[in-house]
Length: 492
Image 1 (cartoon, rainbow, N blue to C red):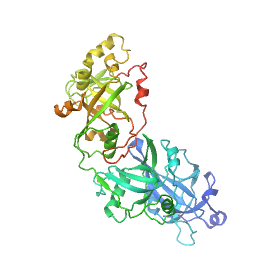
Image 2 (cartoon, one colour):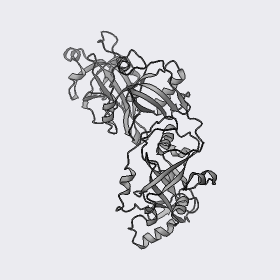
Image 3 (cartoon, one colour):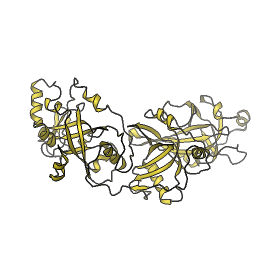
Image 4 (cartoon, rainbow, N blue to C red):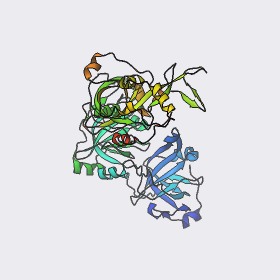
């Protein structure tokens, strides 16, 4: 799929190296090895296809990336073959964005309607087969949570955990514990195509070795642990002859044939046991949406009430779901009726601490009513009588510094991509009351109340398998949230 270029143009235009490119649209052309390419999607718009990202390497060992917009992708895709040496001309040179950089070059090659690409079959320059942007832990630490770069990482696989690990059709998350420096382990979270590809490598057996180079990951720092999240550009390399892997072996050691454990979580965990907050974080990080329901006990002290999201909501009396406000009216998305009746119920976020870690537990109406000996509707009326501008009810403020045993119920809902959360089903002062009492559910948890969650990171060691983390947004620690008592609660 090429278009002839006039002999005159070939006579007057010299081939440019990546480092000699100039900004703008010109007649300059480049020759490079197409080392990798992938589809780029906008995750903020439901994975909308944006175009094709390509990586080119020239004879001076310089890497530049190119971008083919979505409306031209089908035209150029047949000419894209990883490892081939290609000539590209009539393109536009622009500056790279300041975020999500995948090369160290300052420019990007943008394909225009007049851009031509063809494979160079004769008289091709000598170009290396690969080039990587490997970062050490210190550099990854600086990049964490900034989205400035999507670097490459080399390490030794210590364990692999996920659901249905031998099924390469599955795209649910796979977590890989990766040793990248002596005594430094990070957690590689593989999603979607990357998760499927890695499962395929596990299934093949002989293609997966313990020494691995992973490309184009997004580093996140949470709770003192480093998490590397896969992207559409993530690829896996196991060739020990690669200089980057050889350098890792010389510095850290490691054996490519070393066997690492596989932990398949397909069947989930149902056993009840007393665990720490770190263990709860670990369980939810190690699991996915296929996990069965599980209950855990956690003993913790209430640091205070996190009231930025309010302490109550208006529930439908028919199904207990949260009513949605449409204009000046309230409606229920489940009950098919115009005569909707609402009632105020508790939904309280408790900042808790077990002595080693802190978290936010969410408690709903039944348990909160028993705990406070107060009715949410009555408290709401009192607030309305005082102009609706009161702080937290005193009965909620008085919970501070009290210690309880919380029964945490985990369901498949807690593991959907947007809701990795914990909800309290029962509260008591001792474990005996919980283990001998009747289990009860609050039937008000659902899609409209999915923002309840465990927000604080783990810092201690886990007794539930490996301490594998999950990419998470940061939030204020409970201690900071509790000091905001002068802030008014948000209204539903």
